[in-house]
Image (cartoon, helix red, strand yellow):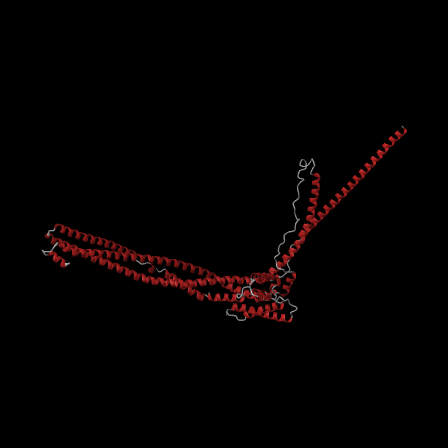
Length: 573
């Protein structure tokens, strides 16, 4: 610039000497625009960083809420579990006693016929659909279906033996579990004694020798009673308060870490972004000022070229020098704004990096604790569900005996009910048919009478049908349990369930039988009245016949008496 100014100060310079400073000024204007655009990009990036951090904090709030909700749910479930832990142990103890009782209760063979029939139907249907199978497979199926009774008996013995082996190795040190195992050992010894007695007296005992416990254990293998109790004690050991309480304390500390306001809120960030926006506004003003200076420089140059007066060149160069100094000052201000924006962005990035590390740490910790809480909550839920099953299994001996007695009672009731209904329907149908016949005969006689529908209305009505049809069959799906089966259970079941195996008492059918007897007498009375009326009708018919015969005889006599005088008259005449 100094060279240009010296040249412009010489007397022999020409007007074209201002072209080089103008190009330099135009370049400074372009640099100013680029600096302004660069600063706007930096400030825009900081705004995006602020928005991104706000989105991260919103996500952190949602995670914190979900974590608190899960922790609250688990604490409620765990507190209810702690309150019922003694009750759970008591129920497991009752299950041990129930297992020893179920091992002594025989399963009635008639109760398994329905399931065995369904199994055969499924096998038949699979055979029908599997027509393209090989002959060996069909032979195997037929061999399975046509097993001999000895083979079936052997399979049952093997099933009992396998159950006895499965309960030989307890895996818990809990005293309640030891009680359950002692009960299982007692039931195992009962199985062994029963097997020995079966070997000694095979002809005395029935061929179907399965206990209620055997049937329960094979329903959902491998989840038998032993595995159910083992899982309950395993869950209780994993839910020990000495393990859970420190974990819950860590979870509460995690919530406190998630709610760290010093890390979540960046103090003064909004004011700082506002100041940066003000700097961008001043940067835009500086760019506009650079543009105006460049345009003024070009206008002065063109005006001097148009005047072509060398005397104006010194003033023009001085003016251009002042303009260049102003543009240099503005350029330095733009560089200063650029430096401030760059520094501000770097500081915000460093600040956000530290906070993002904290956020990742606490969210990862919360996620790990959340997975543990989910697993523990599922463990508590499954334990409570198993306890419900334990409670149901503890009531199985009583429910089994009550159900057997109820089936026997219903079958006895059905038998007496059908007998009573049959007798009632027999007499009721006879009475109804008799009344219907009488009304039909009278209707035929009275149908064409002049008095019909004039003096005697309502003689066309019919009695409603009542007790004329047999009731529909019911209780047809009940098991085929007889009174002998109940007596069999009374002879083999332990003393704990003997009070439940009493012969059921039916309802009092005597009033119903009295009603049937009264109806039967009514039918007999109606029959006697019918016989009396029939006798009277027969007598009237006989009288009618006699009267008709007498009338005919009188007519004959009268004819004869009238014909004799007439003949005599003719003769004498």
